[in-house]
Image 1 (tube, rainbow, N blue to C red):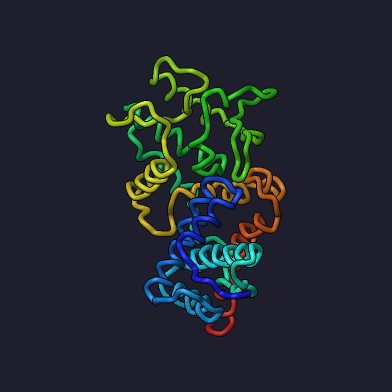
Image 2: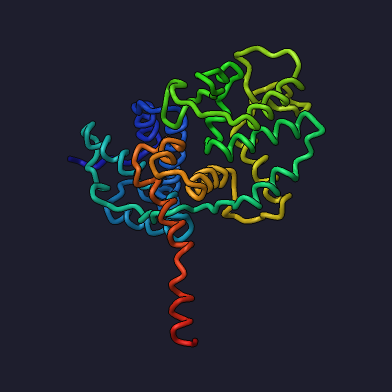
Length: 300
């Protein structure tokens, strides 16, 4: 196969070829653009396997392993497509990205910290009522911000004796999953909705109340900012505490308060129970006092 120059046009053709969700397409576009920046900066028009390896090694010096892995996956898929189209040899075949360590990159909160976060919200305003309802929903259900962002008012329904919220889970096209709303959570959401006045079932469950975009569906970025600001306000200012920490907290508190691994897997909707087991292993390690036991044996 005669090598041809790797150009922006080829990248655009590959992006157009992909049949993936918009968010994934955005990730691939950003990743392959990063690779093109590298080629241009180094005046490489006909890259080799060694060039891809050097690109990966450069990424490792300035990016987290998950980012490196994402960028290299895009490069590998790009060259697979090029070879499939008969345009270029698959020079990225068998190149490894980055080793992703098992375990969580974010911390969880204990019961006392959660109470401090929730207690720090001024619920006298409609914005405060909304923020309180959002955070209480996150920490009791383990929902992701994208799942909260997609929720409509009509997604709150009765199911037997429970009130549930149907959600469009990660990677899903329909709202086929649901989480149960504990009574205090439902009350908080309904108190917020009553402040909004007349609403339709198809309206977003949570909306912006800023002057410039009042009434519009919130973005995941706004939801993350609400979570982070509430954490900081409660004195929990750490890079390892973010909106995703509320999901970790839900899983951890569930296990600490008697839930089984299977119940927690169902709560978080993990396909593989090994993902849920990470929480159990972390709790087991936290309660393992081997170091103190050894020190006491040596030092008395």
